[in-house]
Image 1: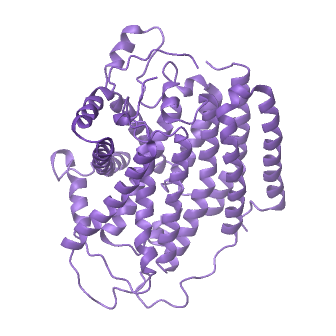
Image 2 (image 1 turned 90 degrees about the horizontal axis):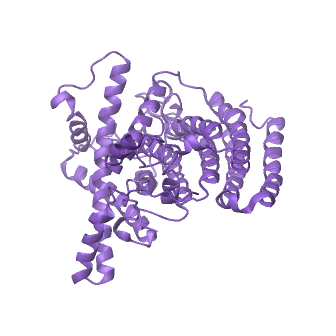
Image 3 (image 1 turned 90 degrees about the vertical axis):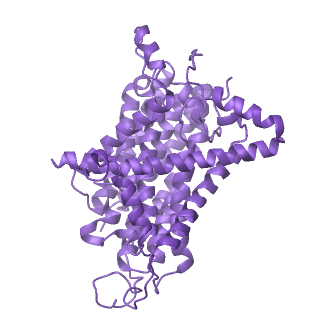
Length: 366
Length: 126
């Protein structure tokens, strides 16, 4: 790994550092950490909620554009307040008391789904000096957390004690665990190139060239597989079998009402962001600004765009592609879905890993 | 080495617990607000399973396709093997030829397993 001098123009530790020192001035160390953790928690909550609201609006607008409609345009300017209205509407809906469910597991399921997405959310590289969870096994931790979400969905379907939800949960379980394999292997492929599992190291390794260019053929194959598997992982069309409306009413969350249903909805949109965020991290340099070798003036201008804007911008662009999938491909059948994963993506992925090893060993990287 | 972590907190475990508690807080808070402002009405029909309007027949825990189990078992095998690939992937560039050769054997067994499952028809949805 070359030691690139990244300018760190928008290094957020310049803001958080003085706050830390100021707090340390009159508080003991443990209390300082507590205050900082509370601040981080509140920040996470706000960004999480705002991004979810933005994504609901974004998806509705994009879907409308694909169908030659206008989309939401009544609430607020350009319909911008539509998702706020949706949120309040979902909050004032009744939480129906059901008498055939497993009450404890039924209540536990949304917690698991939200916790899984929140933990993944905190691992993402938000910006220079804004890395929240920075384990040296960061990306591995992220995969581990995302698989908790499957548990939540299985529990939701099983505890509802309804035929639709049971089938929905089983489909979802089979689909999510299968495609998790592809995601895992894509991550292994890129970890080979990065030589580290730490999120900050992966980002810093891309300071001069993004991995999609550095790893060229192998990275491109990994990227395509990752996007397919990521779409399946978030249960979005064309892989939306777990909640195929025409077959299973609403799949695993049929029995959930009001805000209880809202959590699954929230987590689904946030998972879309997380999948795009991880793709950004692994292939498009995380929060690294776009640099073109030789264009020094251009590169300097790009450095002056704040790093969180780079990260969120890239992630939203990739989310747009995933939403695009939904309106391009018809829904798959469960057998087609599983054979796509096990007979095509998995062998291609194993082959791709070998290809990446060759590229690194023979120094074919760009 | 510049610390890129927020507030320079070295121990990420604390932040992981923060994220976990934030998730719990989000759900608990929203449930509490919804409990305060949402209406409540009782109706015996409301408590029934959401199916087609008439009372549910038979067990909800109906039989389902055995294929789901097969894929779950296959997943278990492959996922554990992927976990073993991770440590090697991190050190791959330092370990060199020796590392590649040893992982190639492991990798071969993995591929053999997939081929065996394929030939046995475990990947068919019948």
